[in-house]
Amino acid sequence: MAFTRRNALFAGLAALSASLAAACSPLSMFATLAPKDRARRGASGIAYGSLPRQRLDVYAPAIPAPGLPTAVFFYGGSWDSGRRQDYRWVGQALAAKGFVAIVADYRLYPEVRFPSFLEDGAQAVRWAADHAAEFGGDPSHLVLIGHSAGAYNAMMLALDPSWLLAAGVDPAAIRGVAGLAGPYDFLPLDGPVTRRTFGEAPDLTLTQPIRFVGPGSPPVFLATGEADTTVYPRNSRKLEKALREAGRRVEAHYYPGVDHAGIVLALSRPLRGRAPVLDQMATFLKARL
Image (cartoon, rainbow, N blue to C red; front, side, top):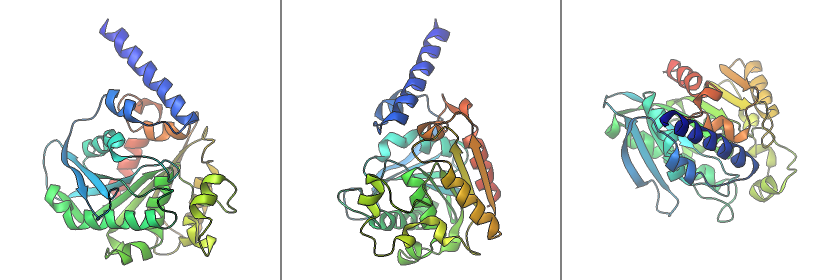
């Protein structure tokens, strides 16, 4: 009977994965029902700025230890949706892999457009640099991780040092960045989401992560599903090519049969068997430390 219930739960979670790929549905149900990794919630709802959405949660390994790598995770949602509470399973998964994990909210459309969410992300990284040690993290060993729009945020912060410098963060503290199904090269703007989010930028080329690949780029981990029709895998392939041509360290994985939502849901315990994203990403990021 227990085996039957467990199979039913996994089947339900798989169905939820499919529905999430078809629509930007909240992850609240998944965050509530999915089995989670063992970890400590070090802090909840901590302000990294003065505005309501400038809040973050902190997760740490179940057994405390000093000098751990610190990961800042940015979720996706087309820059117009998402909340950190629905991604606590990501924070717990990263903590179980030995990271102090920070899951940060940021301001969204229509309240803001480019580049305000990058400014928020840089402030969240500044908070991590200032406070990671309080939870066992090493502030000089920071990694950035993001999915979808959050992968864009993480990649821009890592590749264009101006955002972190403006927030008072030494870009050299970023030892690696992981992008899951992110948009990195999407000009011309050809859809309502990108037009409303980036259309007012005075120079659109400066909104593209691929534009900032250079000799100072940190190591990059890329993962995307071959079945992704929301952010096409060509984004990752183009960025991988640019990084290799610049002589930078990059590791890229393209998973057959995995869609846009599935790539991040593969970080969770019940859906981890679909693609080894968590293990490969953690191994790559830790090797950079």
